[in-house]
Length: 263
Image (tube, rainbow, N blue to C red; front, side):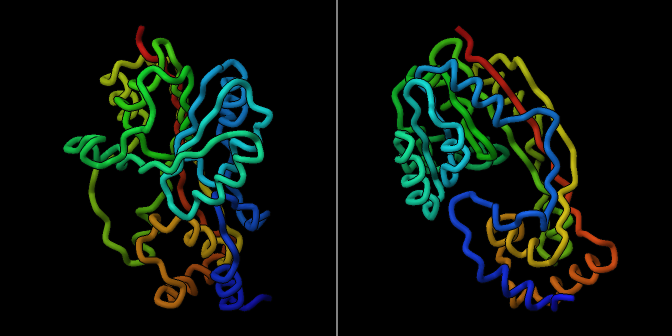
C-alpha cells in the first residue's frame, strides 16, 4: 500500500498547466451532468458566424471542438493560463486576448466593469454567440457584445467548498450562493430571455489523497492558502478516511443556462 506522504509529494510535484486534469485519470470520479455542455457548445458554434469563449482556461475544451465554424475568439483572465491557451488556440486559428475576469457574480452589486477593469474588450453587437464554462461574467457586458437575438450559453459549478473549508479549518464567509435562480434573475435584469435552465447535484469522489492534493493545487481558491506541508495533518486524516471508506466525496452543484438577448 502506497504511503500517504508519497502520494501527497507526487501530486504536489506533478505538472499542471492550463485547465488539463488528465493527470488524475481514474483516480477521481466526476459524474456527468444530465446535459452535455461540450455537445451543446459544438452545436451552437456550428450555427455561429462570430463567437466568443470567455475565460477559456488553457484552451483545451475549445481546441477539442475544432475545426470551428466562422470567426471565434477567446479571452482568459488567469495569467498562468494565457501562454498555454495562446499556444493551444493558435493551432486551430483562434486568437486569444488576455482580459481581466469579472468579479464573482455574487460580488457584483456594488461594482461595475469599469471600476474593476473587467469589461469585455470588444465593440457592441460583435457576436451572435457567447460561451462561458465555469467562469464569472457581467450579464450587462454579455448583453452589450451580443447582437440582438444573440445566444449566451453558460455552465457554472460550485464545489462543496464549505465541507472542505471546515475540514481544512478555514473560515467560512457567509454570502449568497451563485445558483440557477440568481443567475436567471441577473440575466433577466440585463435584457435576456432565458430559454433553458437546468441544474444538477452530484458528488465528486477522490480515490487517493494524491488526487485531492492535485485538485486543490489546480483550483487554489477552493481552499485558500492550501499548502501541502502546513495542511499535511489534515491530508493524513482524509487519507485515513479514504482508506477506510474507499473514497472522499465533495458535493458538486452545476447549472446550465441558455439565454437570448432581447431584440
